[in-house]
Length: 212
Image (cartoon, rainbow, N blue to C red):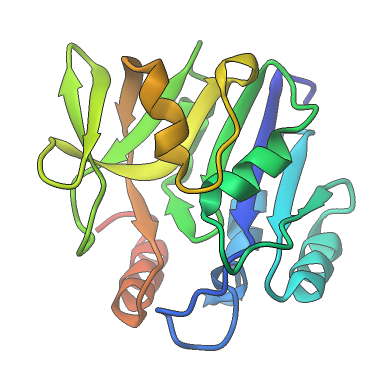
């Protein structure tokens, strides 16, 4: 489907806290790599960009085996930069809107569909669940602040923004969004895979139809 969005999946990192020696995009979730779950949900979108770094060739092979029209962008500095660096590299030449999608994130399919079809800019939030979350203060349905100390929802890493409003960065994507707030927020059901416990919870969640 032709649309006005470029979707950037950032999976250049090493996934060291998971401790299984592979990038998190390739972990097996119910018989298929995590990134394939993501691509299945994005089948109706025609500008998908996957940012690779650690184990780049393996990620490229898996993606190409599933879909042959994905563009690949390299973040050679993946050891020293954050997700903003990968996102910024993927943003070059993007369409009117650009979507930030972390390679370790599983999203309820219905929620992702609603999120991507939202008219305008939007940030994805969820109930705080991780050990060290970035929290978002919400006011009148909009994010007005990111914080490590307080907030009603946790930042999921998912955002849809006007490309020409973003200034490239090299640390965290939410830091690229901070100067642009307030921004609409949508609460979505997600699971982020960061640790072994996260992984086990995510597998059970997917097996249960993307519900707790």
